[in-house]
Amino acid sequence: MTVDPAAVADRLARLRARIAAAESAAGRPPGSVRLLLATKTQDAETIRAAVVADAGAPHPVLVGENRVQELVAKGPQLRDLGVTTHLIGPLQSNKVNAALRWASCIESVASLDLAQRLAARASGVEVYVQVNVSGEPTKHGVAPGDAVELARAIGALDGLRLGGWMTVGANSPDASVVSAGYALLRSLRDEVVASGAPGTADARELSMGMSGDLELAVAEGATLVRVGSALFGARPA
Ligand SMILES: *Cc1c(COP(=O)(O)O)cnc(C)c1O
Image (cartoon, rainbow, N blue to C red; front, side, top):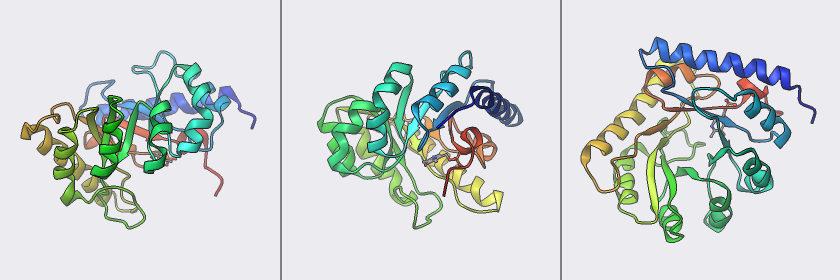
């Protein structure tokens, strides 16, 4: 793949401006929202162009990979780039060791069984609880009604750190439906953090919002948006 670093830099500048405008529109301080690059199918050279172009941004950019196999393949190059890498796709239990080798945060934890397997490695890895706020059957994540109990159980585990919450927003043309899902994730976060349950006090991150709807997510309190196509272009179907 050939990358045009100038084009990547241009799209990144526009993306950073979009995030800044969304923060401002929501009455939130500049720099409240971090950017995670959703880099599935992108090669290391393209990722490098984006990371280099983003130097000097309010927060260092994060990288998120969906598949452990791809994470492992790009792992050494991502490490050389010095970026922090998150896993944002589902993790099968037989791939836990590989994921822990290359990702410092697993955003896709949706079962106590997986959390226990991660905790058993005593890696101190950060995890987010992924919630399926829309209930769409194709989406990964714990049901909203089970999310508080799961978060409390994960918080009680030694060997990992509960850092926040993740969701993929509703696939709906109706902005109010998408926003309601993001507001739901925020209210689950607030309920658990306020509960005082052990290990939940720092579970403040809200990873929500993508290329098409990041403004809605920032308005509902996102602390981290995950963006792919707005930066890298549409993925081949
Ligand atoms: C691909 C992906 C994104 C980014 O989606 P875009 O619409 O390309 O910005 C965010 N989160 C997850 C989990 C993804 O798989």
